Image 1 (cartoon, rainbow, N blue to C red):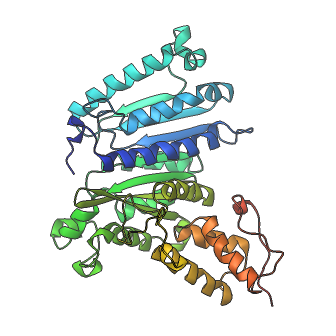
Image 2 (cartoon, one colour; image 1 turned 90 degrees about the vertical axis):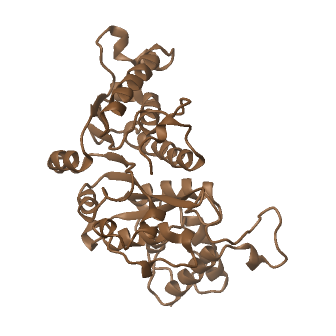
Image 3 (cartoon, rainbow, N blue to C red; image 1 turned 180 degrees about the vertical axis):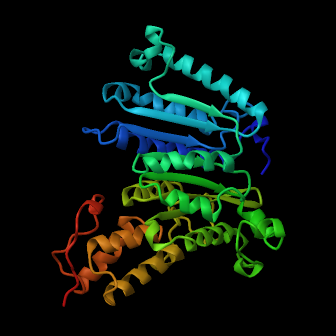
Length: 382
């Protein structure tokens, strides 16, 4: 992917990626900044490949989206006395200068707005924002190695990281395992999946992805990001306690993608909700990734032909696991569904069917949004 894509208007694929970022920040920020109680006094947000801030016609890139969403919580930050540190990093010096200029202008405009300006310290000429903004010009790997020991010292602090790398080479197995050590870190990273598939036999690619041509199906080239995702998922260790979820993005004939990571089931549910709103058929792509051509406005005569195969496979698998006793509680079903990329509503379809068949107790409730807060008893009829 060209590093000069800011010089033109963002394409549809980039806009989808940035919209997912925006929507997840809308879900993530209030958890730590707008709650009744304040449990953490320090919060960190990182954009490690920030670019210059916007495209050629002014559409916001990731750093400006982050600032845009943060301004909604200036009052909370002040009243709750929360230290919020925002770090933007960009390797290219020419882009860094444009980024600084755009961020300065955006913060000045924010200070001047009637609503957000009420809580802005700049109004009292203190020349500071409610949060600390640091803009760096470093190589990602060097920078990440430099600041990671500091992160470990307060690894329980809430962090959000956006890692919009150019290609595939920066998010290595080592980086993934380092991210897994940070207890309250949610992250989104980008991969050029089509290029990985195309050049996987190249020695340069082999240094970063332990895959071969055989791992990719020639019949399903659009599934290449699913392959990349499964590779990263295979790198996880039991002690990582990390959920991962993919989203494939089609740009012309190429497939790119993002991978989301979180340690908490609620974070996973929030991300999956965003993805399933974009694509109600599979929840993991901005296109018909399985080429099923299902039109919800023109249902087929037989209901089973209106259900995407991905959902059918999940429902069949879940039924089998419940009946075999591999999943014995509401909580176990919830966690398994999320780890498979599905929402509570998908699991509930199975639960309702098994209840009607007498396999599950009639009194057992369907999976609720806050199931991660409770320990569910066994519900299989003995």
